[in-house]
Image 1 (cartoon, rainbow, N blue to C red):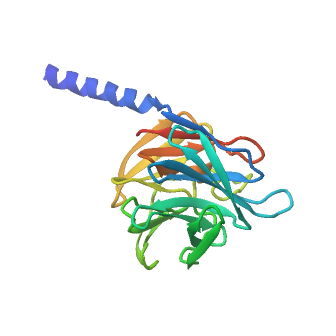
Image 2 (image 1 turned 60 degrees about the vertical axis):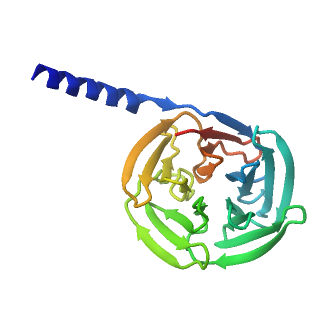
Image 3 (image 1 turned 90 degrees about the horizontal axis):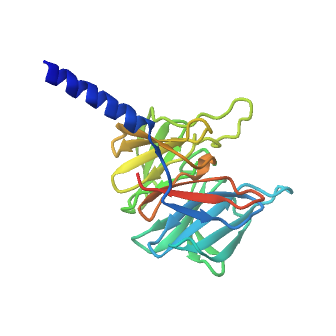
Length: 254
């Protein structure tokens, strides 16, 4: 009986310790200064690519994609004028980058240098603030909006299913910028689905299996811009907002 009680006590202490742990990033990347917000990051295994969203002080979109080495060194910036981007993702199937924009359109990037794109889908999801994700297997698009997760077939844009009840960072009612704290963010790796709460007192990532079952939550040390939750090069990324200043990306091995 004493042995069983001791095991229970030790297990409880271990759980408290693990819950109290704050995970720190393994990688940090300085995003180039921009007139708009850094929004998302992806990788083709050789480089990182970030995109930006929002508008400048005159209300104009100033889309761009920044390219970095895996070591985090800046390579080049590519202009995508008039595109207000929310996410960028890479398809391992066709070796192309894709972007999703505020006007709920998804484009395939045909050429980075010239900024040439091809419209793939439009209005398959409703909220333009959603920073959508592509499963690493290249088959499924994930869209999270206020705890409701919609999954679409990437090959034709058809709805697969909807999962409700995911935890997310609720928007501040006194300053209701939709998505600011993670209410429209989603990240996906080979095994798990991730949402997060970017409030300064929380900074917590929530982990679910591919069926939408809650697995665990993890407290992280850095990142405050809700849209930026991303999966790239085997890590989950968050970032500081870079509008008008240098944005900082943080990569975590969870």
